[in-house]
Image (cartoon, rainbow, N blue to C red; front, side, top):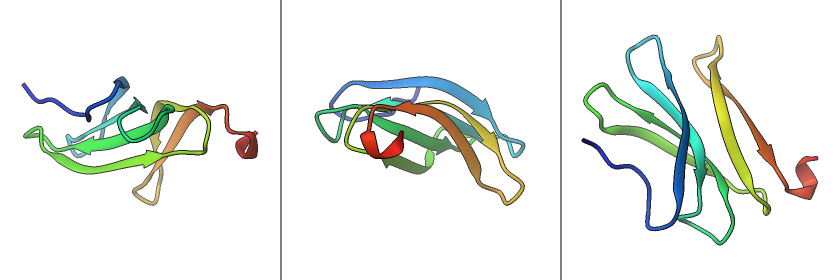
Length: 86
């Protein structure tokens, strides 16, 4: 069993299997600051973390889904309460 996250509240909301067998996990984290940040990370087939990204707009952010794009990246769907993102 693998454990992901930090010392605060972390919530993996969705797990999307990529075409190469890896997994994109999206959700929210409170491990780095006092509000919720959008959290996305890629996990290899062996369970190791390939990469991890946290996005903070100043309010509360959360990711609900990720869709593979034609350039090899991902489009992330989520919500925010940050004023500059509305």
